[in-house]
Image 1: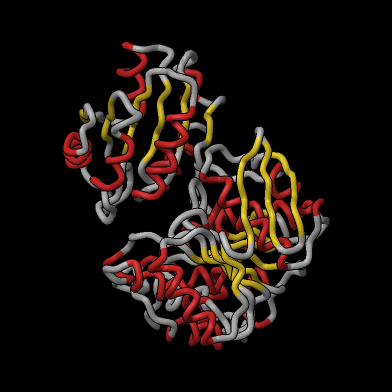
Image 2: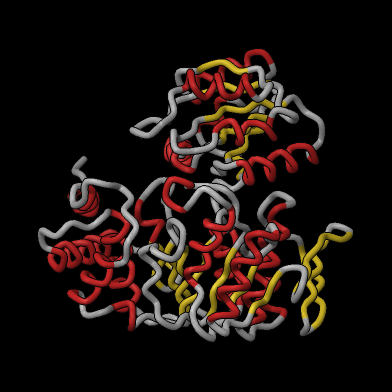
Length: 424
């Protein structure tokens, strides 16, 4: 089977810069100028930054807007199984012909100049969006905010900052305040910002920047509230109260992600129909996703298999809370992580809810943490941990002993992507 043209072009793009991450906007401004500034011709932008919940919040906003009969472009990262997932044009994943054509145009415009993979593929997304009509563009920040390749929109319709936590300190700063400052770099003068629940230190930084830019703040706990009541989601802001179904995404943490999405929809002027669609129609893979079909599920028919791509302590706390609320069942983890993550911090909340952990290396990832090191970190956190050659090997060991176990495959979106590909 021949390699798709887009894969060949994407491979070329990987070699255009010696670093995977090199935060600056200079190269983006250069290539966008060479392309005729497509970012200036895209529909109104909702720009989303934060440490946790960006993707889920974006997915709910998109479900709400589409439920109201509107069309949306969406740009997210990383992808799970195929690059095409990153670029959704007017509601549909970009097709192979359009992606190849767009990538080719960006390579021609860039020439031999250095540019990172994320920068040139972000430029490609803008080109794709500029060529098709839609009502909104949803942009998820890749890393940080201030110097992220997506931060080239002069006047978005709305910005959103999800909860900020320690992550990517080597790029964003060692303290919560420094990281919040980078995230708050997406704020624009006079443009409203929806702010999710924050630690006080982060909120102070975000509010200070918003004040300097005269950007109206719609903050959790001040301007809107969200909570679960009798199996329903209740949202309240200055406009009034909404009584809605719980979001279709599993986990108590999705209640607060839903709150940010609802605050965004209300800020954009959308009513109850859009808000209900945001809850009931949302789909977002690898966020506590139950695997019910495919080879992995068939190989372990009595087991309950879940998949989650969260990879930092905040995500682990949310996963642990969800597992603790589930009906009692033997619970085992299969975990693979990157060597850039706080592995011990990720393991600590999970030690209280899991009976064991099987550590794996992530296939095809140069930055994978070796399984032996993941297992060592898990043992330090108090988990009964061992190594496994693969996810399937770990599944076989676990289910041979406990056929009806609950098994969570976790630790990295890259591992989640491999699982989704393997599982069809």
